[in-house]
Length: 212
Image (cartoon, rainbow, N blue to C red):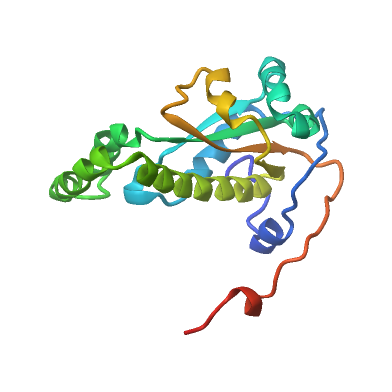
């Protein structure tokens, strides 16, 4: 485990997770520890390993002051949490293809010929992909990293809440991002809960599953 991680107990991480609405405002997460959390979260899978997720970690008073009016129905979570992570999906993620695959070769994860074969196969397709198809792809990938981030946070002893109620059409520009390139996915508040939160009912497997 890393020096910050608190548990590897899978049941504690998964079954102990709650959507927390109130945090201890005195608890702060250092940027070093937050970087560890994000690093582990980005082990999530993504289409052709393009890793289209982008994060804005809002942990300063100034940053939260910008966010509060954009998430007024979730203002209390924003202000009391240690930080809010704004997750975006990058429509131009293919710009990083050469870096990702070249580094994989350098680290011995794949041979040079496989890199060239794969880049030649998918890069033209990605560059010509329609907006809607690319959006579907990156939103799926960003959803995977978001869930992994919340589970990693549990392993580090923190609690989270996935927030969808905010001004999605304004948030990219509010933090200096190109709104035509970066699609807002969700906000994730993170911090130390001041209560246990509420358990919630899940539909049984027989209701949601078909066997063929």
